[in-house]
Length: 423
Image (cartoon, rainbow, N blue to C red; front, side):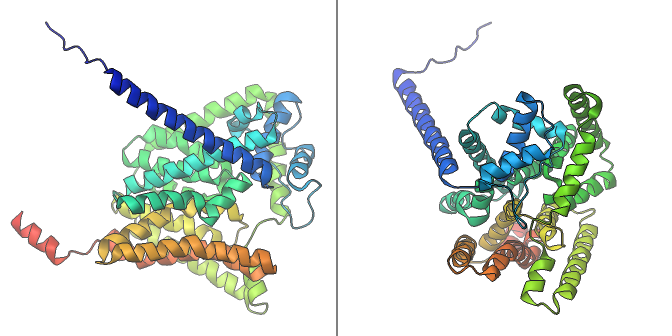
């Protein structure tokens, strides 16, 4: 029996591959170096430092990671002093069984280098999210728009804020859509395991998790729940071995309670009260009730529909979450980014001049938030900050509903009708 031997690479092919490898290495080095430079230059990073300092305190000093000592260390790194009223107290709220995510970064003593590497991985995660959502909705945009979409995922305002702050929200966005990908391709155990890691920052997508668990129960996908339960059990056992007696549970709960009581974060109630002092509370209640009714209606309609509509409902759920009244950080809004792909896809594919219209929407998403940020910075206007918070979820919800019919039920054009006759 003869076997075909694999053809050896020619010297020219080896040189080309070597050049590609060298170019990739240079690009990655410059990318990482730029992030480390930003980390040293631009203040912030408390979202990362809370986990990094907690992990280092536990690993090297055997200090309770949820203690006030760790929070004070983070405040010194971010503010150069203790936090004042209205500022983020940077209390660690990550459950201990997920804290090992920070252990590799905790081995780096220089906070600027550790933060720069975290920023690099967060940017890579958001690029991966952009690619994954395009695959899930089966949209292949033109090359120039594909490149522009990837650039938007890095250089638009909300991702930039998330990177600078060191928020884990960029990783959560990738995690959410990896769960959807695994669920769609019936990799149920993998989807369940990934669900455990979504508890890393549960407030950013708790409605998304409720939607997903309701779908799992409705479709009786027990293997997803089994994967979730097994992964959670393993991580809990490991955490009890690392931290004997489970002595992290009570400090973790008190830390979360203290973070809630601190009052840090943006709420729709505070925004509406500032904009309309008399009617603000009623407007807040009305928005919350309307948003929840809208979500329940869409969840009900999406019970037995195809997965394409479920993705649309998932993006809508993530966009509605910041508007229902719970405190939300600006850096957490980055999880709304995949919804833009649905808006751009439906806009570009359903109209004759769709790509030009999609380009206009692209420019609005890119330029308008930055202009609000600069205006708020120059003129110290609180209204600019309030509008900046409201813009992303409102734009995403409006865009999703504007393209709802075409995305969920693409209209049959005359050309589609002719093709169906000939087929």
